[in-house]
Image (cartoon, rainbow, N blue to C red; front, side):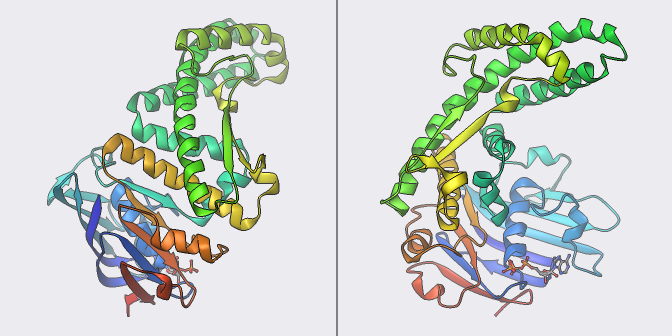
Length: 366
Ligand SMILES: Nc1ncnc2c1ncn2[C@@H]1O[C@H](COP(=O)(O)OP(=O)(O)OP(=O)(O)O)[C@@H](O)[C@H]1O
């Protein structure tokens, strides 16, 4: 997967710009607030159809402008594509694929695959389990359409059952639905657990290898953690389902007292350890950054194993807080596939051995 060119008009702080990218590394340099992240955001929106910093696409329109467009020419599986996105204040975003208007965003998602690392991703290691579950879910939903369906159904049942538990004091008859919801959650939950267990095993293996490559003196490890009553998350889905159901029956009164769903994959976590100790609790800034980067590169590797092509890797502000060796890895040793890296430190471009460098100032290439 390879973005050849990107043309921007009235997008964020770009009035008009055209980038011709290198198929390997592209380093985007500039001082703070000049448009480096805006550029990565423009590439990412051609992949996900969303702006990664806001849910409001109109925020992408240059201040005072009424219309904007983003056009990417890229190759995927030896075929050339053009994606053009037109933003306007008056209408919702229009999408064109090879010049033909597309009605549904869903038809475009995944055509250009990207993996993004942005500073907010550092929360992946430090924050609560929810951030790690979201990371797993986003990756798995792209890889496994069935997973996306199971997850959607499980989340719907979870919300509904939570309302039942909450409202049951005022309306005790609602509890007649408790068993049916619990069993259906056990059915979908079992399948989610199995998918996550297999994905985490491959992800952690790949992430540990990347980490060892970047910092051989440290070791990244981890484990997928699910409900304690599930003895083997790799087991047959039927067995997991029975264990989840037995657990929920055994804890019925506790659930009624807590008025919330006490167990299931909505409590899952992915524990991450550096040299055998919690990365969240004991990792330094640079180690947490390396850990997050390793997970993202592992996600990219698994995409490659499934798809036969690397997604475009977008690394926003990944280099700060990394020592020389780790910076060298990011700049020069991410093998294969296209990479776009932003940085604001002077002198970084001298360390890049191959690829293209773009200097950005006030929304212009200088
Ligand atoms: N819709 C918009 N129209 C015009 N300018 C915008 C718009 N949205 C953001 N900007 C401007 O873009 C600039 C931010 O660009 P960007 O986030 O790409 O910076 P950056 O180069 O990545 O900086 P940093 O190194 O600080 O992360 C800001 O000056 C902001 O005011």
